[in-house]
Image 1: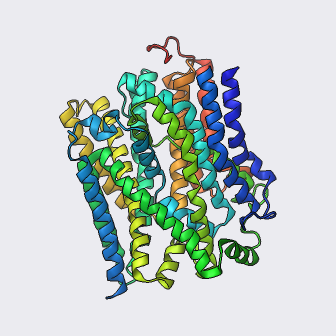
Image 2 (image 1 turned 30 degrees about the vertical axis):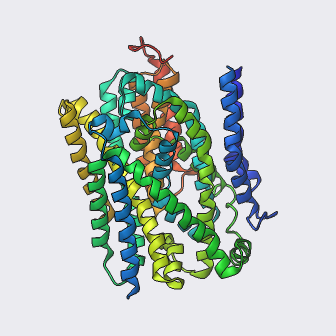
Image 3 (image 1 turned 120 degrees about the vertical axis):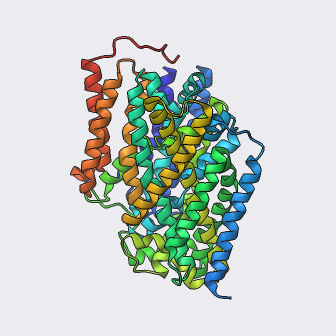
Length: 62
Length: 482
């Protein structure tokens, strides 16, 4: 159960950076001038460590 | 003074200074194969971080990412995503790879496969394969080096001689110092790369357009389709993006030099912590994109592989020679140091898995060290030959490398988790994958817009699983990894 939860947690940002890109392939809305597609990718790259930290917490509990 | 002399002198100072610093740092370590190849498995979190960052942020990041932002636009964004997913996957299996390596005293990917599948032949095959696949990756660094030295010479020198000289220098450096020297040199290199990229990605757009946002307005006005992927199955469309991100993130650690970096860690926790934090370092690549986009508006018209010159050419045209020298010198380090780690990785796997295991040469520590060093020179020579004959863009060289190297992944993962898989199953999958990958070199876009390397990987897994299910491994010779 714990192992499954860890994998699922890690898959979320990986999915957002790959398959989900098909749904956000847009220029608008722009954030700080960056096109939305790039904003989306940057956002998920930046928070991937948080997800992996969560995975690490679960691993220590197991 | 003439600008090319100023720029080239600054480049020389940066390169020689960094190498001198690294050589001073490694002097006190006694040299044997363990120290030479994996730094005696003693690197803590910080040195491992610098080594990993150092070998991943290469002239591909420095020039290639900007070149694709300039020449293709949104397809370049895959570069930001794939590393991040690569670390996520690495978080799960690399600590285990490290643990088995420590326990069984392994140095290379070939060692791991030979050990887990109890098949020396598999280790030999993987050794040969990795050795030759490393060549285009080193060639990529040479191409980057040539771009920088040509621009810094202001078109007044033939850069081929300079590239040869710089490459000879770095070959001698890694010949002498081994992995630890490369890690030390990366300390300087990474600090300089960060400064250069901040300058190119922030200061350049402010200088020419007032702000990065205003620069992007100009790019979008001139090229309305530049910031999005083409739909569906077109070349460099969404399907290409997804399949490329998956392929390259899966193959992210499959190079011979990557196994070395992982084995150089002093414990599994160090590996895990690095995988968790490395994605943050990827964010630097946004700045490289901004530099490439700025160049697209300021120095338009570069076609094909010439797009890789993007922002460096801009510096040559609009900035004093010393600025160009500092940035190009940094770029030279970003080409030379990863090249040194790659040379070492290819040499290590060939001497260990082919010379020692297949031919029984180089069995003592002394002769292993000798042969590894000799092979550093041989790989360097092969890369120079390929560089002279192959002229292609930086990203294309990298994708060629990934198509081949990623085919190792099923074997590595099944070695850790699936006891049914035998050496024969892995070999059958690997051969299938490499044949499809080699065939796909002739087609620029795969069926349905999929990256052909990804299809090769699917074929590889399918064949490997089929063979493993029909002819399962009867008894595992070694104790299971837990």
